[in-house]
Image 1 (tube, rainbow, N blue to C red):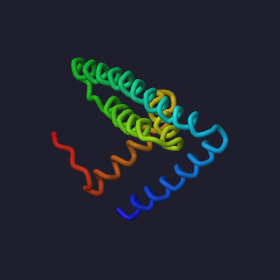
Image 2 (cartoon, one colour):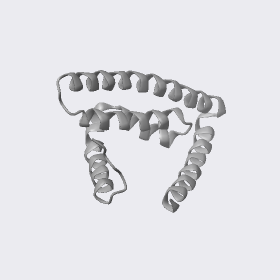
Image 3 (cartoon, rainbow, N blue to C red):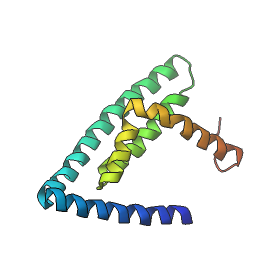
Image 4 (cartoon, rainbow, N blue to C red):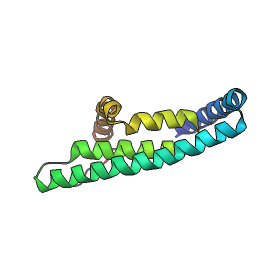
Length: 128
């Protein structure tokens, strides 16, 4: 928990620094407009990618396949959407990386490894 609090404080300080730099380079109004546009684009991409994953989940379940990869995609899209909707350039870049299918396929193995570690430490339970 301490790590999350420290990460939150550091990320907030970095975001403020980037806001100040962007405001100095582009001006206040373009910076605010860019933040608003990235939030709107994030909401649109999240909705579009989320619906695609939902259809993929339904197809896998109807075919009797376990929906493991689609669930990982859904988690990445959820986190990416939250990061894109929240104001900040660092969070926007991270959220965009999680929403793009090409970059998401490089992140999913690390996410799967994390989930397996949680299960082996009994920090996460899977009920069948």
